[in-house]
Length: 377
Image (cartoon, rainbow, N blue to C red; front, side, top):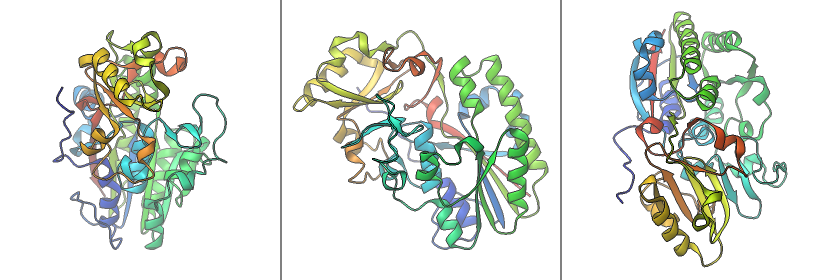
């Protein structure tokens, strides 16, 4: 089977914040995106807003559709933890190390990157795995602050002290919000500030896509609310301010080709642990079993997934152009990325995740491509 296509001509999500810092005049910022100079800027990330979905449902988002827009690719895996880390560090998953929704850290266990708990037992891992050690690179917010900018994070109040915030958004002044109204107000307050870099986050579109499916009536109604948010921000942009709207991934609706790993003995033989999620699996093998596991997964999944060994996936650039030494063991001995609308469920071990209609994580354009929509005051 041919490897997944990684279009290097489409800029990676990790280029956004370095490019915005360059537009703000931060020395040493190397982002490649063409953004004119600004005195203040906000990157607003709408979780789950895929390029293809936005194009299909543009009538529900006229304000977004009217902005100058281009495509970004989010990289692998196409999931929130990796996307937020790409924004927060300016590098791809092979360097920032948040290699999936869940991934194994040697000596610690399989970490759920959103909850920072052991994915199997639920144990809190903030002690055994301090977030600042799991992701030790300096953040975008630290670079902005070192250059004399006011550096802010605007997101849900409940995320203020989470381990994921500490890992990838630290050094930003956290402004916790509760609804679309104070999200918009906090972003505009930041943009009214002289020399400010701000990151804002809205997560409900992704939630409704998971529960009801992308393109469903609830999802479209939420897209309309997101569009009103963007419309309000654009209308309130002060002179010299930049707003960049992006996303961390798109989404697909699973079909009946999805396989439950727990019901396929051939997919369990030689496996000691699973990571990743339904569309992007890390498979950690028993000693000496990797070749057999790789062969079995390729044979059983067939054209339902791209399946590669760790070294092959790294060499083919799945996790970006560079993979740090401490990140390599977090990548599965075998890595599987779903094709089409298939998936790799774990109905007993992951009942909630396996029940979701909308999924993401893999290499399809619907998951990989997101908008970069830009407005200036």
